[in-house]
Every structure is written in C-alpha cells, then in structure tokens.
Length: 463
Image (tube, rainbow, N blue to C red; front, side):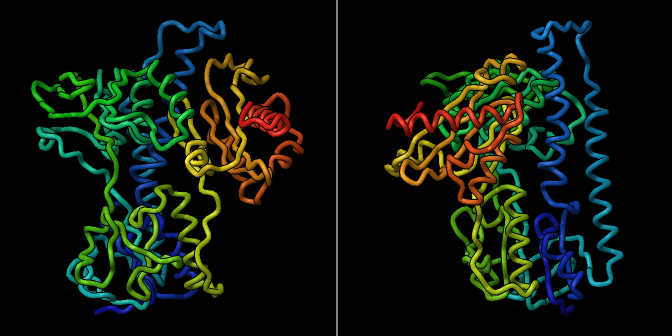
C-alpha cells in the first residue's frame, strides 16, 4: 500500500490542485483513466471552439454578398483535415501534461480507473493507495437517452462528434441545450443539413427573451422541431430514422448521422463510493459542504461531479480555492462564488451573468431593464445587424447590476464588462460613467445602460 500526501482523481480541474501541491513538496498521486487534461482539453471547450471558429468563418463567407462581396465558386471544407488538425493539437497538449507529470519528482501518475475500497483507500490497476487528502475531480460524461433502438447504432455523442472525420450530408441532433446548439451550428455551417429535435425549447435555462431571439435566428439555419419527443430510432442502409411525436402527431426524420446531446451524467458512479461514507445527491452528484469537503473528512470534490456549475472556469475557481485553503495556508473560509458567467458559442452567440428577468419576476424584485438592439449602434450598422440585443437588469433602489444578458456577435466578449462590474458590486452609474471606444460593440452595453437609466427616471420597468 502506497502512501501519498494527496491523491487527485481526475486531471482536468484537479490539475489546479495536484501540480501546485507537488510544487510545494507534497507527494501527489494523479489518477486518470482517459487522456490527461480532462473534458475541456480533450472533448469539450477547446476542440469544440477549434471546430466552431471555422464554422463562423464559413458563415461569414455565406453572408459576404450582404457586404457587396462576391466569391465564386462556393467554398469547400476539408473536414477530415480540419478534424485531424484539431485532434493532433489537443492530443499533443495532453501528451505534454503526461510528460510533465512523469518528470516531476513529487508526482506519480497512474493511468487507470480509480475505485474506493474505504474512505481513504483507493485501488487503481491492482495497487492500493492511501492519502491524508483526496480530491475527486472526475467530471461528467454525455448521458445517453433511453430511446428504443438507439443502443447499438453508430450514433455520436459530443465526444465522437469532435473526432469524427466525415462531414455527414445530414445529421439529426437530439437536444436543445448548449452542446446541441454549438455542435449543430458547427456541423450546419460547414455543410451538413441539420435537424434539431428539442423536447421543449432551445436554451431553456436562458432569459426567455434571449432564448426566443436565439431560437428565431437559429431556426433560419437549421430545421428546428420544438416539442419533439423521440419515440424510437432506426438505423439501416447507413441512414438514421428518428421517430418522434410533435403536436400530437407521429413524425419521422431520416439523416446520415445522429448526435445525442441530451445532457450529462456525473462520473461519480464509477468510483465505488458505496464502500465509503461519501454521500451522493440526486443524479449521482457528490455532496459537498461550503468548503468543498465531502461527508468524509479530508476528501474533497469539485467540478461537474458535484453538480453546482458545469464550466471549466467554475472548476478552475474551485480548484484554486481548494488549493489555497488546504495546502496554501489560507484561513479556512467557506467558498464564495463571485457572479458566475457563461457563454454559448453558437450562432448567434449567447452570454449571461447574474439573474434573468424571469427569475426577478418570480422573486417579485423591484428592478428595471435596459434593452438595446445591435442594430441601434454604430458598429451594429457596420455589421448590418439584423438581430441581437443586450439586456441589463438593475435594482431600482440601489442601482446595483443584477444581471446582464446578450445574444449576438461577440456576446462572450462583451459580457465581461458586466461581469467585472458585478464582481465589484457595481452600479448602473459605473456603467454610465465609463468612456466607451467609438464605434465598438460595447457601446451596445452602454446604450442598454442608458435605457435602464431612462426607465429609472420615468419610473417604469423597462425602456
């Protein structure tokens, strides 16, 4: 039985603890059953954005005629070369991590699946390891919907879709969330005919006005079926047929490929936690306290597997907090999350931070909303914007910023000015007292702030 100061299970967000702890001289074991770097590097954020950016370029080419630019013949995509480049890039980065671990005197890397035998005893590849501190950062995986006929077919999840070298002529996408809309945009812009089947609506966790605007634009590029409930899947002759009900009628769609993007499942169920005192929440998410400690002292968990936030930037924050408070000598203080932002890299882009207007209405909050369309800005005129807007939500009494939501070009970048002000408990006046570069897209945020001020002055809810 080998003894370590720290065992980290998972090499994504867990790297925020394992590497710096080893740098302080602690003996660290890192256990990873897949490629090093976790979901973000290998099958999530990074490869998806490397695929989505070319899709954005392709979309710009398709729209070039609107700017009096003609390109003939139409562009072509070397999809196999594109995917091969993406995979080679992320695999090389993963290999660098393994090389750094193997050369570090304080890190022992175990490639394999971890299983708890007891509260502080872990088995991997037939070896037993113990440690005073254990960090679980095993993330999540795509969940497979229990649709009759789906199992056994060559359907894709996001994992396969990011390593698939053949661009299908047509693709059925099951789901209406982040992953479905991002990969739907990527495949569609690069040449696939896309059919999106969503059980309810697209991006249903977003502010409802944002979701409605997104859906209106997204449906111009994709065959979107809302309220579509899959009933069975058939695969024959290299074609998928998805049967579904919609508006009380039985319908079907046939395509060359099928992507299941209907959610995620915590990987905590792979760890043998029944052998420990670690408690689980519904959905197999690991229960943690305000210090990210599980129900076993000295065993911590973070990231997707605890079910709080599902972003790389959130697990990075949790990892840095945990290192500071467990190994960095900081006073033991509960984790305090700043406003947690998010972005969806589809077309159009979506980004948000803080409360939605729907949440404020449900809470009975006294607020005002400032709303400004992209087209009502100087850069919006240059872009010939036909859609998109920024919405800022302000507390009527304190003038504090309660939330900000953007749908449109560069939403993920523009949101950061709202994020920064909210992080500093900023007010509407802070947004208004800035000098904005003219003519740049952030003037849309400024214009929304001006509208919020007008709403306050007129004592109305929104302008």
